[in-house]
Length: 440
Image (tube, rainbow, N blue to C red; front, side, top):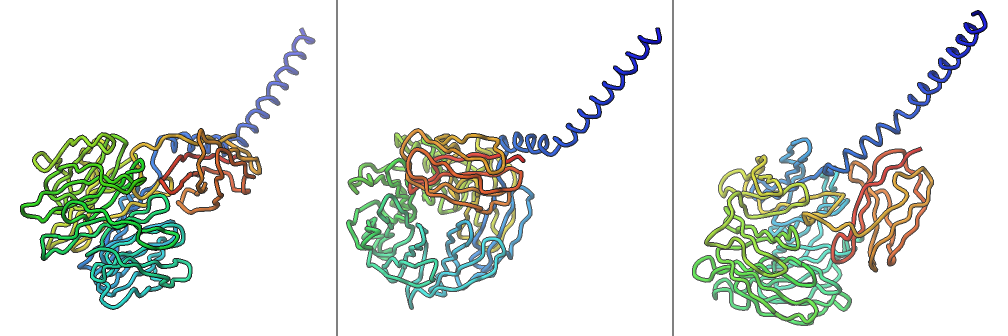
């Protein structure tokens, strides 16, 4: 009996030791377990989306954190008659028509860094950023200006059509819509095509009355033409960017404004009167909701991604309202902003400012999770010449690499344990994105 009891005690001691070891191992693994849980949760949640609103009459920039619902309606004091903004990872570029200048702003702090003068009487209207260059349309000068964003120098200008407004880069070409002469029923409504390398005009394409906004999709340029607000109804003109010819005119009616291509089968159009939304299929050009049957919950601007849709209700004469909609277009929540808002932009480090509702998973990563210092292998199904960027949870870019084709192998840049995001982007937009978990 004593022998059996002795063996039993030894067995108990071993079990106790094993339990202690397991407990110790479990405790040491807690950080990894928590990271794995966070990784799984983030796989089904949104990256923190930030909305920026230009309040033209208030001369302020609003910043809205949609994750916390925090609103700062004085994030930055803007110049005279601010109209449109461009948002990138580090800066916000405010096109201030009254100052004939572009205001460079820190995206994180809201501090003004510099003001870039365009020219007397130019009345800069809108802008687009491509690489290190910012292209700005001059509504009254009938020119497009090229600015180097690193030096802040105005490098060149080129004459285009009457009253240039929105701009879009597609391939190696810059497109600008010319609204035309409003006193002559928008005579001269057109789209000018500019070669980016030589910065010279290649072509001018006639379109419907009063083109004000552009969007690119699948090698096609979609031109939103507002009409004359009276007896010329709005339309969407489709330009083949390969041949630079007008191939289709979609009769939308109403007063169409900005276009957000949400999916290959759905494009939403804002209403320049700030009330409705229109919709159509950007691939087949079939109209879903036109001026005779518009969608409610609309506004003068529309942006979105896979998690939300935001529309700007200008509420002329009062404070504007930003309305958030679910992807099914049902109402979600809203925020009050400043007086006479004229622009709305979405910043989402894990996607883009005008991302589609669903971006195909065209890039794979292994290993994932990865150990610190491990070799990260990215691969894609097709040739993609673009930039691969890594971001932390604050949305800050921490590394970027040239993606040369189908594969990219890099050494993990000695990041602390945690969850990170990666994104592959080329001139056509986001080609793939995902989440990366680093474990010690």
